[in-house]
Image (cartoon, rainbow, N blue to C red; front, side, top):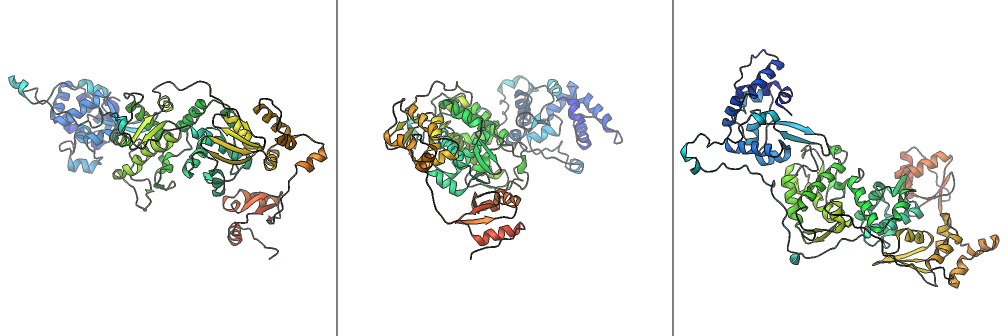
Length: 587
């Protein structure tokens, strides 16, 4: 930006204040163009620029020198934290308070004297900037100080007080590793748990409850996950969608037809990398909504201005900058890092500096509005990003108020090369009794297939246990997997050795009629059935979130099972809200 652009973008009232500072006599009846022209000639005159420079005190001069030394621009939020607020005034206020003569801060002294202005950066992270017009900086006597007019005693004068540049040169200090307590090393179990989730979605194709699995699905999955927790499972689901591993159609979740097989076939280090990169660029993952204890009204105020991708990018860029000087093995304080973010990049989440119009409350219902609650909102998000999301992704080891980048984490922040190499692979253990044991070192693609054609027993440590039985075969058949497919897979797992007798009898081919009788299983149960008079009515019921939670499997175009746990009266009431009458038959 140059002087002319600054003046052309200024309000007439500000131009009048600048004319007072720069000694320009303006005709009150002059139009804006003439006002701009007169000021431009004055502000490009070095003698007048030196006179205005002499009006500044040392703090204002230090602020201007620091700003020019930083390339001529700085985020507004950071500049005003260090050098004070700038009151934005209309014509009446400027005339009555004359801020050009009595500024309340070094920043305001520079603004109302025409030495700085505002611009907007629309690049990676939109934000307001404080800038010095380039041609004005060239005209200013930047090396002249308040002591320049003193004579022979200049060497005895006290040096100019430097502007307080809190955080500008501050860096993280490494911690003594011997003092790091409660160590929690990161792992790559997210890869394994996501494989389990994909298999579950392939088998059950469950309805989602908003952005998460329904409670019965969460409970069914729990004992098969290496790391449990509703928040982590919700994160995995959103991450899977972001990484093109999961697709959601008509409210039901299933593995992506192309993305899931491609990811499952990758080596572990590439799978970790793919998940971390998907998180980095995700527009679906609103990290703030995962922070425990925060309740965000996403439909109120200016929350729609939240861009999770840009906020995440801003924080990660700052993290890389602060951690680059540290050695690969260094630990550092999470609390100290949060403090540095507050000082240097407080606006990473809200680059427009709007701390007052997001509706966020804590568990006690207290509204967390304003910059005073930065620690409770932005600070909490920084901590959760480190100790939650990045730890789950395998990027950060944790201790008590301590963190350390793993090899994956350093590569993610582009501080080192990404780990590579072939996976160490374990064989699948198939017992004569049909029990199949699969370690984490078995390829995720193979475990995914085992999970599709067997009954799930559980997961413990680094081992998954499945059982090849009739229930598993029935599950496989519903997915189009026949006994021949399973037999071939098991033989390969056994190194092409003969199948154990029990498995051979279970899987051996038979005549059509004999196979049907031999492999068949039946169940008998009492059901509540809802029948409609038109297929369209049933389609509406099973696709409407408030209604489908009462239903189970479809029994055709116009019938569906009603869950035994459902309250029939509540179901009828919700149907009535949608204009559907319900008649109960049989008492």
